[in-house]
Length: 75
Length: 217
Image (cartoon, rainbow over all chains, first blue to last red; front, side, top):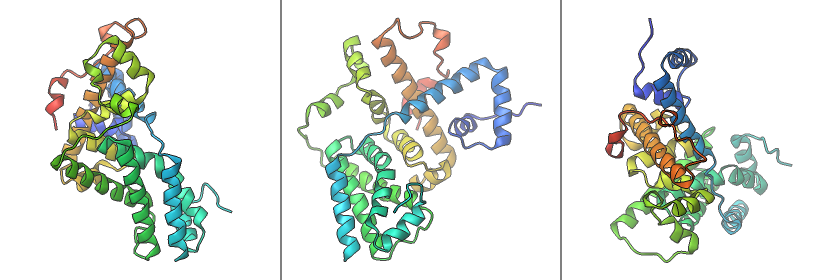
């Protein structure tokens, strides 16, 4: 018998919060359901896009932080 | 000498013993994620830089005064400080809105890329910040969950605890956020170059119930 999963379960799966047992069951389910597989792949691809969005603060900001860290460390 | 792979706890211990370089390793380890998360909330690079500095300075003060008691949880603790500062600023700003003159890139940030022409989309694609704008244009509750989950790396249970909602609500907001971002990204990609991306509708799948996503908090 195939266990049913909610949308929230699939969101946990996409975000890597499911257990190994749940992963096996969901992967099996995705093999059987093309529409669901496309949905999950699409949302995963969206999440991956976020990985390339990191911004770097300016060197001045980091220098200011370290200045405070040094002063505080000597007090 | 400081091993770059030293744990946060080891680095904090070294910093408390007077090794300033240990704190510098921590700053470089987390500056990008903290800065990006703050920027996504306040939507202004200069304000984000100020808040990033305030976050680390508050952390330094707490550590040096011996009040830090979150052993083994430095990043979640730091992210909580940053999140609180950014949210406080966001609320103050919303209460007293004002216009800030910005440099070229910030003016660009105010553009509604999803409205536009292929030219707008092309500029947006060339500047990878269009992905960040997808996040920034999400409804506030959805944006918050994305930031807490992706940049601050909180579990959904921790997000639920921090934002005062149930775990199912937090998960639902994440789902709708992803659906909304997916829609925006596909729209931008298609406007950018219809030949580069697939034109087969069955290869660009969106969940059937996405219509309520904008309001699905």
